[in-house]
Picture 1 (cartoon, rainbow, N blue to C red):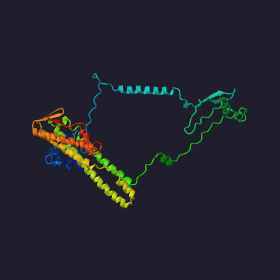
Picture 2 (spheres, helix red, strand yellow):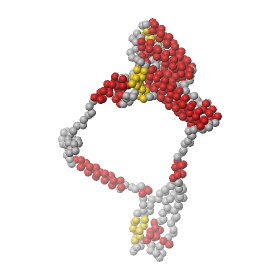
Picture 3 (tube, helix red, strand yellow):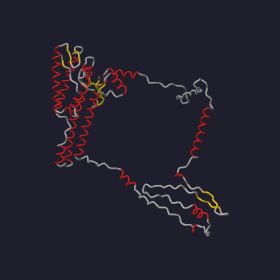
Picture 4 (cartoon, rainbow, N blue to C red):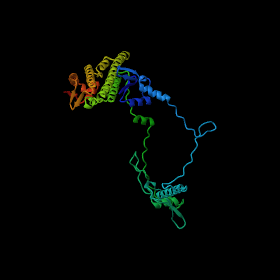
Length: 415
């Protein structure tokens, strides 16, 4: 496992050398990155790592790929020579004729035209009905043009329930009014007037400015100079720091910390110890960020109170805020718990191959190692109980995350 600092404040844990090599090739790990050296317990430059040197040297020695030249133009550029298209062949190996594609397109066009003609020859919807002019005979000498009645349909407006379709006059009245000449007793003057259609009330006009003002709801703006804005930024800064801590603990993979698979001598102890070191580093960075947030915001409040004349009630509101920093007692308990767990893993790492785990019991070949392990196991149990009693299980800080990583597992008893 390799713990790499990609940039100041941003760290990543790689489980194997293949993951580290892939990150170097992708550019995630560059010459500015640093790697944690376990033997010296220091951060060193990634350029000193042999794998980084080998990958960089290999990348420099590889010649750039040269494009294949298939032809030349007058200006010296590459002119690819087009390859002749292969003749179409069916599944049986016979050549396909060139007239089959046009014939298929022609048949498709004919079918499409038949479908369009069939669609237009069907019944028309009621709203598409319009009066057609039909010649009728009114007298022996004067042909009359009448209008076929249109299917009566009511149209309902969204602004009113009044129908807007005018009532139809009788066919005889329409015919006489259309064809009777002036002065004729059958003229339009002698025909009863048609029923007057009811007119809808005109809908009110809406201005675009008033409509947009009604649709857009403005969120109230908070003055950045007030104590409320300062409290919101303070809470947001602590939430962002806690989110980075939770992401780091997920990367460390500390689930079921005392399970037998994590304590076996076949590499389980080594991986667990590396994961614990990564988690401890994330916790250390989180506490540094918390201290910086508290100091920076306290200085900002002092400056804002003097510059903008905060009232004593506003200053009291800031002083009575919910402290987002970790409780000092939980900080001490979580630090001691991390040190105790690392000591137990150190004993198991030193006795690799000289102990066996059977269920909830562990047997050491060296009695002195069994005594050291037993004392550390009892100390860790007391620290866990103290952290739970102090409210660490429900806290959102490092102590709560560490207790959730331990879960219901416990160290096996020595025999």
